[in-house]
Image (cartoon, rainbow, N blue to C red; front, side):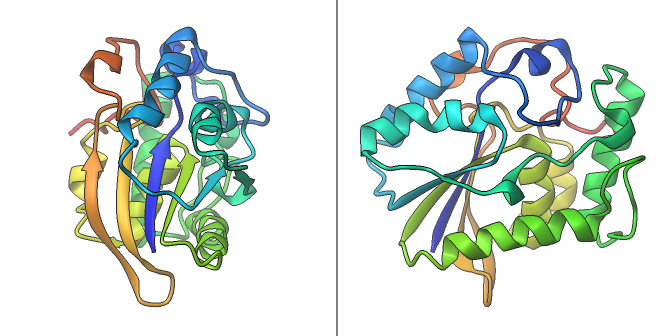
Length: 220
């Protein structure tokens, strides 16, 4: 199966530099809506058999133009939601962003007992994301697009996808509507096909903004 992991469009929390991982979560900014509207054209040559979103509203808003264009009803899977920030929720402090990202990339390196303050450990996060991916694989479609979240995509992919280097992913941002494309299945594993760091609609949809906590690089 070809799996396209698309990050949601820009939200007010991304602009303000807030760790905002709770449900139902923020809507898209006007710019985020523009990013979402650009997705169908950017993927016009791709055959997509199914769409999936997390339980947070920003993913449904991001996929809506593509769902309308393809006449597909997105599947809602709670396991695709963002890594819960726990005690760091709504923080704009750079030090807290650093703790958050260092933790989720620690999981990708195998330190899955490590826990976010007041939040999940790596076993909990990776297990719920794995279950959602397995449900998508069971659909039997050749290509599935799932709209998820910056830290969730980067952590899960770094942990499971051959051809992705965790150090590179950790230190490279994933823009809103950036895409990681992989091929494989839960049984045999996954390998990297493509990694689009910038918005799929083009660089003109990548704003100069404040800290974007779950998509930002971790400082050296």
